[in-house]
View 1 (cartoon, rainbow, N blue to C red):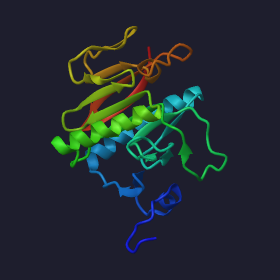
View 2 (view 1 turned 30 degrees about the vertical axis):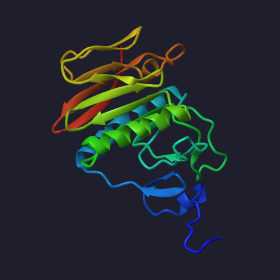
View 3 (view 1 turned 180 degrees about the horizontal axis):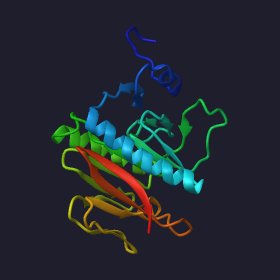
View 4 (view 1 turned 180 degrees about the vertical axis):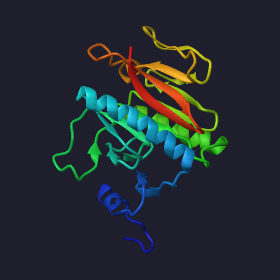
Amino acid sequence: MALGTQLKATVDDLYREKGKAELIGGRIIPLLPTGRKPNRTAARIFKSLDDFAEATGQVEACTDNMGVTVPELSSGRESFSPDVSFYSGPFPANDMRFIAGPRTFAVEVRSQSDYGEAAEEEMAAKRADYFEAGTRVVWDVDPKAESVNIYRHDAPEHPITRGRGETADATPSRRFSVGACPWTASSPESIMGLDEARPNPSWRRRREGPVPCWTVRSR
């Protein structure tokens, strides 16, 4: 081996990383901590997803810092660590290990550094990685604008943008209907095209002081 040649990092190296990170191109890429509003936004989304998962027993909601490994993608990426995600299995035999396989549904909540042209390019590249890996839907949540761009695997360049006072279709048979609340949407299953055999809750976001609050209600 030539002097100064750096060995390619592996998933085993990722396990030894002290902070949140992803494995891309054989390198461990640290991910920066986030601020209060992005953190609380992600927490509220997770709580709503987890309540639904517990009620149905059909899926599992994952918090920030969950390690997700995938076969090496064309970008060189071998792992993700979404802010919130939804997964239906299979799960590892050893529950202390990362989960192998793409998220069905992933949420990326923007932090202070996730604005500007360079950040937009990085987020677009990450969404492309998600879809290549097999993720069905990615939410790009903007705490500053209080909006979410919903990207689907079958229309990755045409997001549905949701914000206050707006109504838009999530699928041909499902519609976001806002009314008095900033966002009201059909269930994650309908957004992901998985609603054929699932219950039909709707996802409502309402204001609670300066921090977005997400809860689940039944129709």
